[in-house]
Image: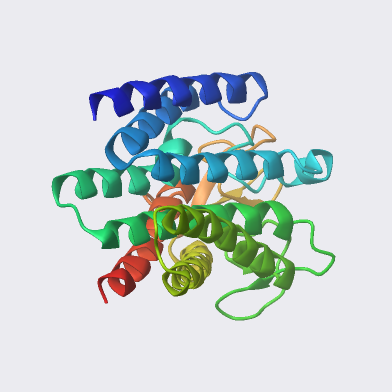
Length: 270
């Protein structure tokens, strides 16, 4: 395990520094990515580390896709495209905890849970990055009411399909490792299906939290709703208008990953 930890440290440090130079990670995000990557590779193995890399590379690439068109939405989101420490932990923290649990209490179901956790965060990122480019306006997941692009809890058909694609990609990569290790085709297909299902459900749960209990704020200066606090992008102060004060977007991402992992872990036990 020590050799895997060292190799995981080397791999995660290399990828993190490259991502920092490309503008995908902040300085604090580099430290978070190194810690998460080292733990996942060291405790889980190369298959686990590869899923993390697939998530990070694909989601980072999409965050820069048509970046100019997305700049107008910066006022809606709590943070920009550079992931900081809390964002990294929100997306990879559940996976790292699952890796620790697998090291302490080994069971095949942990692999399914980890795959689903990565599928969930990948699905959510793909849905956000591609859904905001949809030609049709989003609708609130709870009521179906048309809302502004970038509104927390808003979903589109394009975004939902993107979520399915992001989750399925993680499932396919995971299934490939299972087949390479001598697993059956039926089990591999089941893993892809479960990852896709759990990932989409986790992403929809993310939207549900965003529409109901995530903390949302209102800028008195420009009269717009935002996730940003205590100041808006315009420089004006923001006040909370709904949701739980502690439940920001990072916590929503973490909780959703746990939900997705729980769905797949339960199925894995069966």
